[in-house]
Amino acid sequence: MTLRRLAEFLAGLSYQRLPAPVARKATLVALDTIGVIVGGSAAPELRAWAARLDSAGAATLLGGGRRVHPREAGLWNGTAGSVLELYEGSRFTRGPTAIQFLPAALAEAERTGAGGQRVLTALVAGYEVASRLARAGRLKELHHPSGTWGVMGAAAAVGWLRGFDPQQLAGAIDVAACLLLTTSLRTVREGATIRNCYAGVANAHGLLAADLVEAGFTGLANGAERVYGELLCDGFEPTAVERGLGEGYEIERGYFKRHACYRHSHSALDALGLILEKERRAPEDARVLRVYTYDFAARLTNPEPETTLAAQFSIPHALAARWVLDEAGPEAFTREALVHPRIARLRRLVTVLERPEYTAMQPDRRPATVEVELADGRTLSQTVELARGEPENPFTAAELEAKFLGLTGDRLGGAAARTLCAGLQQLDEVPDVRPLLAGALGA
Image (cartoon, rainbow, N blue to C red; front, side):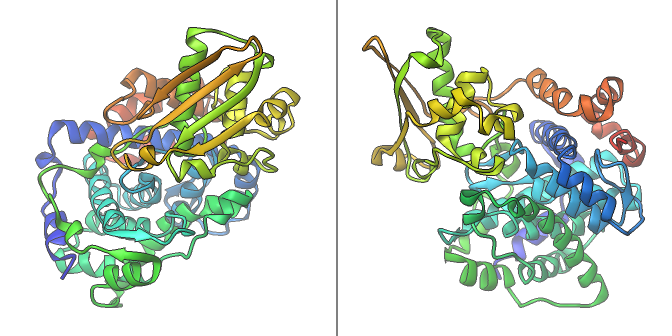
């Protein structure tokens, strides 16, 4: 049975058994993910949706100004955390990771009054399940990863918090495998913002799966392999689920983001940043921008994105906005940025091409070379193999703290944001997460 050893390993997890670097990484992932959720909560559609939720309960809409039923909190918070495209993820899962199950774990922790150490351990458990199943199965080309293996990660995180034994944990994952979404990558290419809900549904369905197991429902035996592997993937390698189990933790391999766009754009953005650090030039000095990268990134070529989500998945827009605005944070992907005349002009000068040798370097490297041909005839070039934020090229704790405060200050107020930031950085010392998360309620 594919999940037997994994479920036994999860059931034996405890915070005290986590190596110090793993516990620290989990703390930073929780800090970053909550900051991204609060930042995304300001989106008009999230505000309108929060007002329409009709439940009342113990779980906080982070930045949403309400407390609702845990499943609705998981759904809403997971969606809010997707809006800005700033969530953490892993190049080995090939998608956003903790945002698909941490909101469910937080909602469950608020329901029961769990402490910070239990939340962090549940986060590690969810990461083990989600990442290992993601690597075991190769999603079909048009499948978006959110709402797929994340549902099983959410079920595992919630099940761990509820004290499930190995049989129950495996059962929760099998039930969750029957609740996966058929999520389409066309939504991001066409800018359909329903895509932002995929991670939210993963959290809600993970909570539902745990409820169903406790109520006596069963899933398909070995459902993760049979449903996820046979229906959603072009292949599934069962041995990958257990490979290296206990020798390291999947959460250690995750990245953080500073650019508010698709991760596959980040190497190109960092390469352009290096060019502009060496020689600051006005965008009008550019005649041509050429990007050479790996196969998947080379598809992000839309020169005329019509929505903010489409812009987040366009290398031409990301580079143009980065050069004109001197940053690629949330401001670079607003409606105003879409119609900015200098950005629009520069977008049309960008060509994105695949280099097969770069494609062959995945997932160990995600390279991009940017060449800028200037009006004076010179060409400036830089290559980045791994964007900032990867474990091999990490951000400092101070940089992640600055990101958190920048995302949460407007929604919560500066003093409340700093208090929340300090509390989350010492999450392992929090006996009950409810008072801490009350500071993220917002208005």
